[in-house]
Image 1 (tube, rainbow, N blue to C red):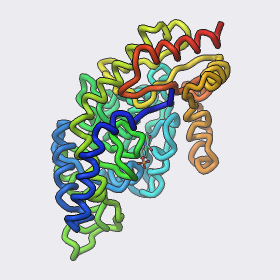
Image 2 (spheres, helix red, strand yellow):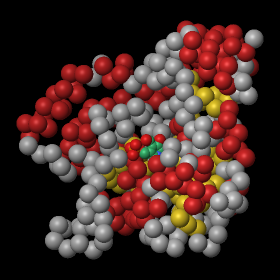
Image 3 (cartoon, helix red, strand yellow):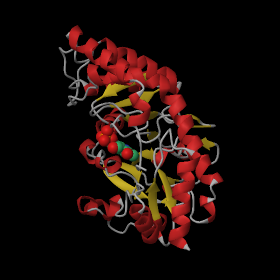
Amino acid sequence: MPLFDTETPRAALRDQLRAAMLGVLDSGRFILGPNVEAFERELADYCGVRHAIGVANGTDAITIALRALGVGPGDEVIVPSFTFYASAEAIPPTGATPVFCDIDPETFCLTAESVRAVMSSRTKAVIAVHLFGNIAPVREIEALGVPVVEDAAQAAGSRSTQGRAGAIGRIATFSFFPSKNLGCIGDGGAITTGDDELAERARMLRFHGSRDKQSYEAIGYNSRLDELQAAVLRVQLPHLEAWAEGRREAARHYEQAGLGELVALPEPTPGAEPAWHLYVIRSDRVQQVAGALAAAGHGQRAYYRTPVHRQPAMAAYAAGASLPGTDEAARTHLAIPISPVLSAEQAAAVSGCVAEALR
Ligand SMILES: Cc1ncc(COP(=O)(O)O)c(C=O)c1O
């Protein structure tokens, strides 16, 4: 069983995808055309937010969102260390310094307390990563008086009592990397926000710092979602809700198979209904579990065994960081198969394999 299966759900849409791609080829419009415009409207409506701005990838989306917020040299941006490297990598290009905060290993998300512990007078923004599809406590963090960028790269389709991922903080970012909950056929990303001014600035920054291609008011980026990717995303977006429900159902299959009696299951944050992008368990005997799953031909992978603050390129920003929750999650986590189509039988097979390994 593969670690994730985005192909089976996408296969049913093959003819539609082919037609959409040919439509772009025949139109001769490849950059910032009607598909990008329509996808931006459709994504904003799906999230329940006023604006969506297509960009080239989820990493640029974070850098541009921070720049739109006015983050620059001399500022600090708080980011969890237990995340994909890009969440932190996107900060230094703005001129600001990443400051690492801890996570709750049960939810894999940062907390208001972990943010408060590292806040300073220079804190300009917090990147709240909705890791693995869980929903970080954005509102609690914003109550500390600092704007939040939701890194929703892994959380398309997740929701909570705070709203949908992408519609909770001041501004949010998505990645459409092919394996994501909503994936394109190359690189792609988006920024969402309810703030008209932030949206305008993000649009200006994604196009070389210009609003009209005549006057260049900022050092910006060439970072646009292209028409081909937007056309592909438009075919898939109407199915995201059903795929998200399939992911929630897969998690229920694992619970019903008794996996929670063997290992620690990922804990949704209060009020969250995660569309689990990755299903990540924890165990002190994780190597044994990983070995048994691999031997049985089941997908398994540790994603962040070396957390970001321990990566060589981040050494200058990590001096003195003490992140016990991060270190525990890094040591004990393991992703096991999840997809919108994972069946009860498949969940039982994985669960049985874990039971064997720990017997
Ligand atoms: C949490 C997180 N943030 C940011 C990114 C960066 O997105 P991209 O690969 O589209 O640049 C990713 C995914 O790759 C991610 O998982």
